Image 1 (cartoon, rainbow, N blue to C red):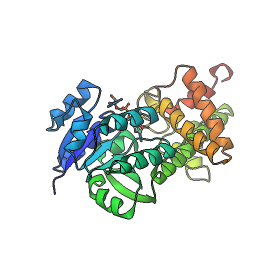
Image 2: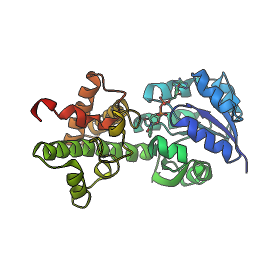
Image 3: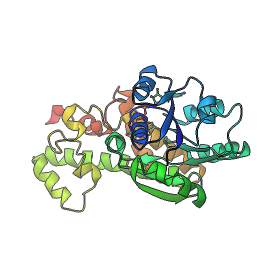
Image 4: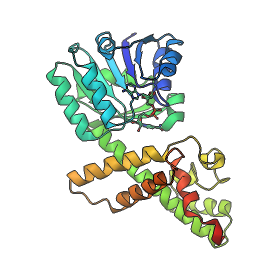
Length: 297
Ligand code: NAD
């Protein structure tokens, strides 16, 4: 049936996700620090709030889709500052540190409500089409309680384990993505510099052992995958800022668990270098453009 759902963070991802919940017949209660973001959801029938404390009190579920650790933490401090409804389940779908998830879960359950992590993959197109993958860290009972809500926005809802395990899965996936994009950029560049046609070489890797998502669906060389950001000067897509943030989260958990991630750490430094060159808002496949040096072609 129709539920009261709070939604905080109506950006590139959140605005599409909230729209799907409205389409599915739920009553949406929304907040964002950006006025235009709130107005676009209000125009679709959502109720706009100026106080997240009130938003939470009117919601059975509250979903947060915010940029980073600090903002997520501050948002929950504020939202729960004068108490919570005992039946509310807070669902954070941002990509944040699993340790922050565990701490928020403790703080919110001590106040009497519930908190779970449910980060997503699938990017802006997945949010727009309602085909996201949700990685859920929760008890069985909480997972079963939120599944039908998440199904309005995604096509695969996976229970990864206890609190923080959704983020653990998300961060490891993105670490691999960051590494493999650099691998594809390096190999494409070396092949092209030896005189190979990029289309021919892409065809070879995509039917050989080098094949991966970055080579097949998101090739960093302009002209190879028609829909990839490489064809529009690396605009849109998944920003270098965000992959750098996610590799920073991987570094943090690797440090605290004494786990070697040599490739992840190097990938982190490479994307950070791109950021320092002013490429933070470009799609992360811009790493190819950065590596190729026209001078030697
Ligand atoms: P975004 O920057 O487009 O949206 C964030 C929204 O939060 C903005 O509308 C902003 O105004 C709002 N906001 C900022 N501070 C706020 C506050 N204190 N209170 C309320 N609202 C506030 O980011 P996005 O691309 O939608 O990503 C959100 C999260 O999802 C990030 O953690 C990101 O890593 C993750 N994610 C993004 C993608 C992607 O492809 N963009 C994919 C998977 C996961």
